[in-house]
Length: 164
Image 1 (cartoon, rainbow, N blue to C red):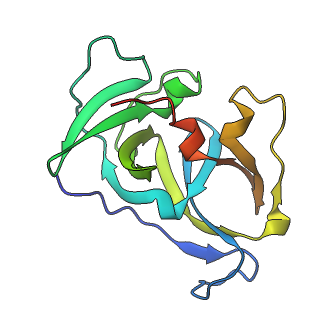
Image 2 (image 1 turned 90 degrees about the vertical axis):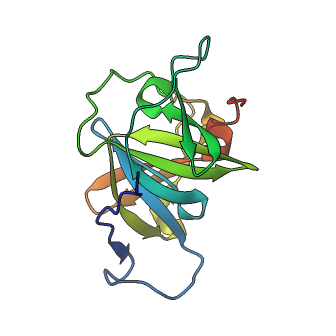
């Protein structure tokens, strides 16, 4: 199945214009799970695909939906709603799989939808809360962008428990 080509806009939040010059800012892919917005390092993203049926693996944790064959590579698919203990949501036309390069492996994560690519300056990022439901090593901070809060994830730490 061909990769989904979502509409992604890149905005430099410090100037509100399209950014093309490198800086100390972090470039992040944002996505939604329920009503919350999350962000991951754009350099970890290989591609974004429409959700498709997976092959289930017996005895796998609930959050591991199964695996897909991606151009000859077996890729585990993690449902981030289940991984975070959120209520199950319906998979719809906005549900996508973000294919990530994590360590020396490829992993897919199922999210409710991809929002955009943003650039956050260090001033826009605050430390994550110590009382978060997610292991604190998985949250690198909280970013503020216009009228929304972004939960910045350390995807390497979050997916380190997946063996394949």
